[in-house]
Image 1 (cartoon, rainbow, N blue to C red):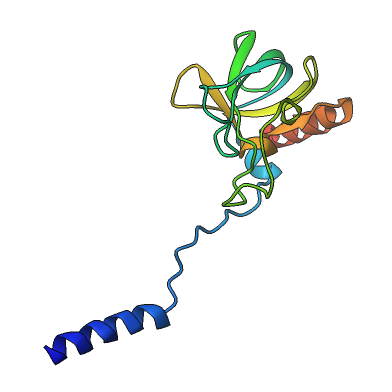
Image 2 (tube, helix red, strand yellow; image 1 turned 60 degrees about the vertical axis):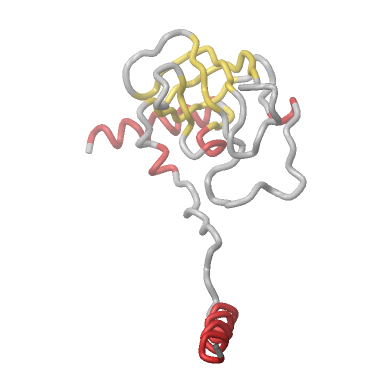
Length: 157
């Protein structure tokens, strides 16, 4: 009996002494080089969004946004409107930012234009953006021009 108690005590002590790394490790920061590998790169106009359910919107699993495709910069054409599964993070953090909560200000303004680095989701109707919010850039003429030049350079290699 004394042996069993000693063995149990030794086991518990070992667990307390040996650090066990059970924390999730963050991914490396997203990069433009990786974003350029997206299946599609488009310029889109934000139309609206809808919650996926009555449940609270999560930092890692957001809403479904609808965009009008204005210009396809990479790949073949898409339908005029697309639906994108939103994430409000870029995969670098393992936990939500302190104090983060969803509200309408987390979404783009209706009618605003964005460069979207898109990949198909398992569901044939939905897209995702490269690394969540990193894959959505405010569209400016300068950004679009610079991106087009990069894409031409990559295509020529």
